[in-house]
Image 1 (cartoon, rainbow, N blue to C red):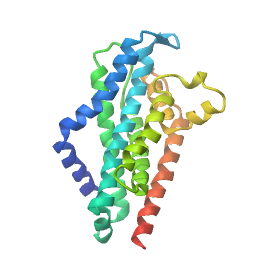
Image 2 (cartoon, helix red, strand yellow):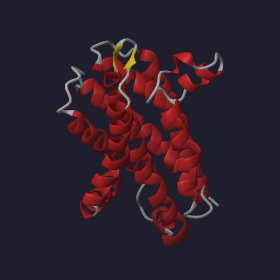
Image 3 (cartoon, helix red, strand yellow):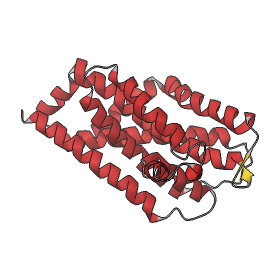
Image 4 (cartoon, rainbow, N blue to C red):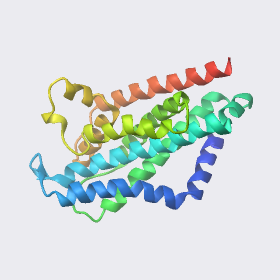
Length: 243
C-alpha cells in the first residue's frame, strides 16, 4: 500500500506539471540531436552517426529524467518540508517508501526516454526498440533514482541537487558512450568509464537497436549499482529513524 501511495503522489505531481516535465524532457536531447546528429554530418563505425547517437540520447534522457525526478524534490521534502520525518512516524514501511520513490523516478525516466523515441520516430535509421529496450530503460532509471535518493539524503541544502547534476550527471552524459564511442579513450580511463551505469545502458540500448543481443555483463553492472545504492538508502533511512 505504501508503494502505491508514493506512486500516486508521483502521478499527481506528473499530471500537475505535465507540460513543464514534457518540455524539460525534450529540450536538451532535442538540441543534442539537432547539433550533433544533424548539424555535424559524420559517420560512426562506418554508419550514419544518428544510428549511434539516438540510443545514447535515449539512455541519457532516461538517466536525467529519473535523477531529476528524485534529487530536487526529495532534498526539499527532507530539509524544508520535513516530509521524511513524517514518513518515519507513520505506519508506512520505510522500504515501501524507498521502493515507491525508486519506481516513480524510473517511470519518469522512461517517460523522458519515450519522448525522445517519439521525436526520432520520423527519422529513418532502421533502429529497433522493443520490450528489451523498455527493460533496459527501466533498470537504468532505477539505478539513477537510487543514486539521486542517496545524494538527496546527503544534501545539506536544496541547492546541492543542482550541484550534484553538474558534478555527476553532466560529465557522465558526455563521457559514457552517449555522443562518442569510448574506444579511442586512453587505456585505463576507458575501462573505468565503461563500468559507469550510463555506459552500459547506452551500449545495451545500442545493441538492441542494432538487432543484437545486449549481453549479461551490462545487466550485472546495473544490478550491482542498484543493490549498492539501494542498500545505502535503506541503511540511511532506518538509521535516521533509530536515532
